[in-house]
Length: 186
Image 1: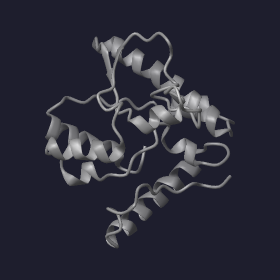
Image 2: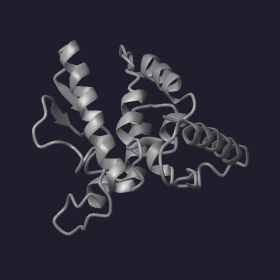
Image 3: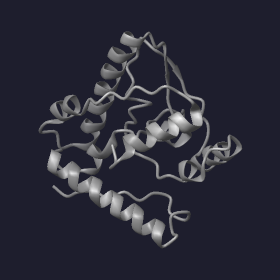
Image 4: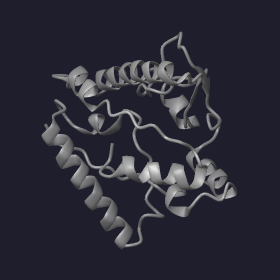
């Protein structure tokens, strides 16, 4: 997760969606499963499998029956999820899902592009800082780290990501930038 992202999202869900949120800290499981992995595609696959295992375990405890996720059309295209697309990369929420899950999958945004999703957010009267927030890679910060994922590299990446977001917001360029997320060299 990005720096302070968990606490920020908890506030948003509590205020705008009136939902009770349960946060599961599975950092140690993800770090263990990613130990020594360098290839970004392998990282995506490991993160996808780990995500579903953790999610299903927690869903069983609470009786949850659905997985609602924010898959958008570019995710589907990049994961070769259409008849005419070739696989660019695996998205944990598209090609990374197991064939059989214990949860029913709901993807209300699957056929929309990012700009259309933002328009839907505005129609739903979501706050601008949520509508305009930078997309977060499904596999998290791990794929932005070149080489092995370590706690130190994650810490550096979180800080650099925060600084970049603050500087772009300060210069008022944030509405014109599609995506900005740093990578950490090996």
